[in-house]
Length: 168
Image 1 (cartoon, one colour):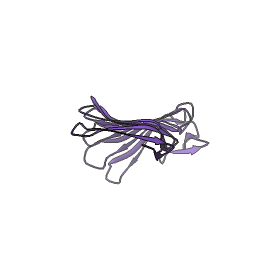
Image 2: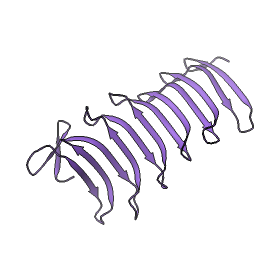
Image 3: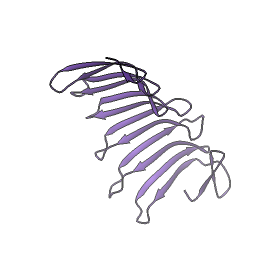
Image 4: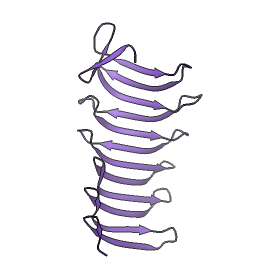
């Protein structure tokens, strides 16, 4: 990272002020890699964060919009075993629109967003993503519609919401 600099969201080489193509890294004094970014013609494409440890294990991977420097496109979060446990999806302007969580490689939770507020359908699953256990709709961060829950014992409950207030 010491060999590059950022100007107007583009990354340049310190040596000749040309647009940077390649990988820039941050390492601890002991040589442990903690962060790196990949660039093409000065535009960031990916960033990687690594767990602290003896092995090089990925903690998160961020994909950037190649047409809008430093605008998020997608972010993957990994557990210590290297499996994906969360994925965040962003629209063309870098606003979060979807969060998904995974258990054993299958979707266990999904929620639509508009920025930092839930906006759309929220779903919960168990049994490897086979059985829906929760469903609710949100508008601008507030529950709106029927909330459906299925307990571990198989008991179903339904509640009605309008603009965040329980009506039934």
